[in-house]
Length: 241
Image (cartoon, helix red, strand yellow):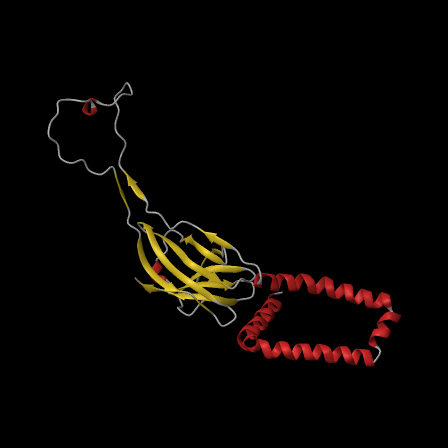
């Protein structure tokens, strides 16, 4: 099974890097080959043979469709399916002030009761918000002409030692089994990459919370990776802010 997945991944990479840039002449050549095969089939009587054995021909057609259509839909449908998600930007986490104390009867304590007016210093703020800080950021680009990618990626600290990977103005070629990773390699997926979850959408603005204890300095890129077929779709090299 794994070997089969690797073969499909290799074919997909071959298509993306070698065949897709030549898609127009290849399409013309395919049309010419189909026309030539149709002429050969007519001259050699293949159509007549199929009509003489309708059950055999029908069985072969059913088997071919039963295998080919689901596989073609699984592999090709993501190319035409687009999804969009807009999430609000990460918010700062507020440190709340301690609650006021109360007396034994549930009322405010004596120190909170109104008394003679006396000059006091300006009260301290009831709460202070953590200021989000961008630790690293970068721009997405596709792995090749076929696997396009664009937008920005940034690692934002939303509270002390709590980080979020944020995508903005994001768009990527869709595909099967796409996941988001932080990678120690600026050029894409590598051993030691941190998996953050499935890709939420092909377009939009959204984020992923990093696990507690994650050090952003350990990673140099955000990656969109086809997990099942081991194919890189897009990468955003990250530079310290």
